[in-house]
Image 1: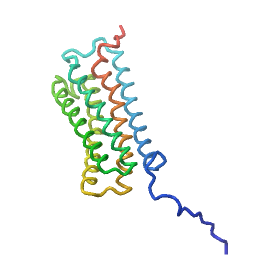
Image 2: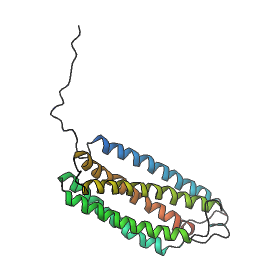
Image 3: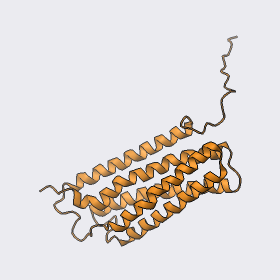
Image 4: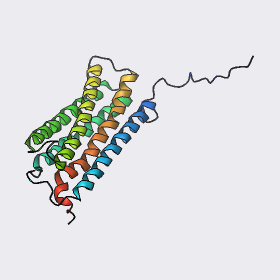
Length: 205
């Protein structure tokens, strides 16, 4: 009979709340895939943009810049709450996790409300023309991920509030920050493309 060799891992922690956790790397690869998708979409936008004689197409208004620009303030500040919650999860601080996630949700909610208001002011939709298709694709895909992460954060906040904040929940709070940092960071180039792209890049003649 062949002896079976085993590896003793009893000294390892069940959960590692750090960048060494497999879940952290899973989230990292997720945002890498999402980032690649948005980069492809940005490239496709400019591919079409540079081959149009008139942009935006006739009848489409230039997107307003004031409200989307102001919305960047609460969006960027929401990262403070995310960082606060993530560090609190590492320290096992219930109050810190609650405060950080609550701050993140409030500021992110304000930014989302401002986006929806601006979205409704557009005089074109995804069926109007190429401009409409790209703008609605940017807004729709990013907002879908945005709301999804807000729901995830809200569930984590609820779990911590009712007293369920063991290692699994703390790890969830910690890795949640990766997705949120990505959503904020990727919105900057998307914002530039949607609201400044029509005037920053000259059309080929």
